[in-house]
Amino acid sequence: MAFFFAGFGFRPLGIMSTMTLRALLDSRQTAAFAADGVADIEVPMVEVDKRLAAMQRGLVAHDAVKRRLQEVGVTTPPEKLAEAIAKAHELGLVGVRERRHLLFFNREANRAKHEGTFPF
Image 1 (spheres, helix red, strand yellow):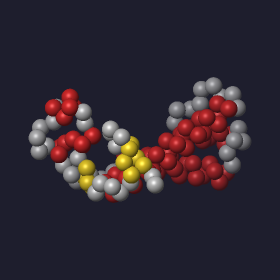
Image 2 (spheres, one colour):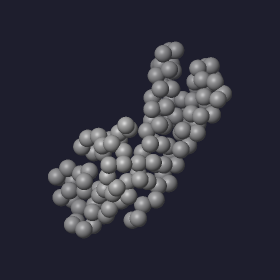
Image 3 (cartoon, helix red, strand yellow):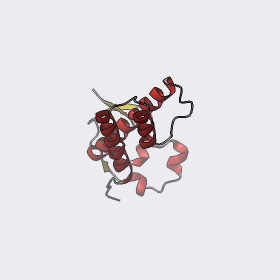
Image 4 (cartoon, rainbow, N blue to C red):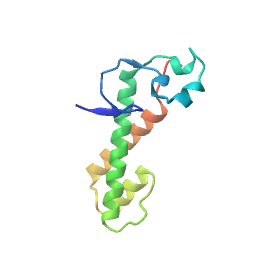
C-alpha cells in the first residue's frame, strides 16, 4: 500500500476523500487563519494524491540520479533534475531510454507542482 506524508504523519492513499489546509497546520499556524476561510475549504484528495505521486516520483528520481553521480566522484551534482539527468547521461550512467523516462518524470513532477487546479 502506498503512503504519502500528510503533515503530521503518513496516511494510506485513498483514505480521506477531502482535506482542509487546517488539518495540516499546527496550533500557531491555525491561529493565523480566519474561521471558515481558506484553511477550511474542503479540497478533493483524489487530485492531490495524483499530483503527490508525480512529485514523489520526480523527487526519488532526482535523489537517485544525484546519488549515482556522487558514486562516480561528482562532488556537487546539479540541483535541477534535468541538469543532473544530462550529466548522468553524458557520463554514461543512464542510457537513452532511462534518460527519456527520467525527463518525463521531471516534467510530470513540475506540471503537478505548478499546474494543479483547486476550487479556490
